[in-house]
Length: 320
Image (tube, rainbow, N blue to C red; front, side, top):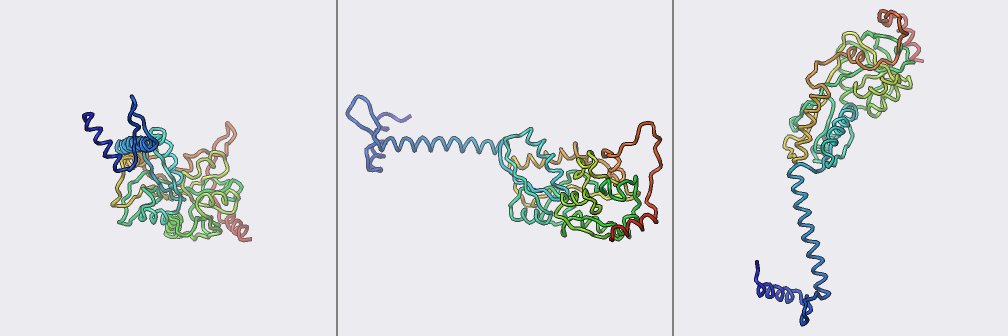
């Protein structure tokens, strides 16, 4: 505590520095001059800002509030990330999260530029400049419109896909690269009929009956439930990939960022099936809601497979 004489000396020194009197002296009370009022308001604002800064820094330190910029891949991550965000913000609503969507290559570039804190993408990342954590295992499924010639089938043989028109994502898509490589390794020629920007474009074109596609199972849950699209089993063919959380190797995470990273990993393991065995395309299709219902009491029939003669007719129809 300062004594009264010491306070008076400090105030007189401040007035000399400012070149104006701060108090009206001579009466029973000490009143502020106009200059004193201005200085008082400025000092109160500074003290309030100091308190606010200390509170905000404390929230960041404790991880109760903060801001994250998270990327999502166009062919996988954008269908997984919103599920994680919904669960996370229910528990920590004070975190501001900005979501950016792009191809895997675009997101990796933004990470290097420090424009993103982390990203959720489909497929492994082998670049040593990044670290990855597996969120879950994604299964890619064959989709077709119910009105498409193969849409009414119960099963498709891998060889039956040769020559059929495929709707694919843009060049550079990791999903497209994986599908093309696996079909090529299996000796199945892939005829690309149309290229669309991301999975949403692929789904819309397939719904219109313009061709077939292979997309993430997470991307078509709503469409298969309503019967807009059908997932068709491909006998003996498995197409899986990890959904990964990726960030720069030297990335510093704030308490909020570190908490989100840990939450995403645990959410994937508990809710999205990181540790579950990889299913085949056929297994995944069977587990999704079936849009075509058979009458009650009717005995199940053997799965119909595409015969070679109808396939030749279908190819001629698509080539017209």
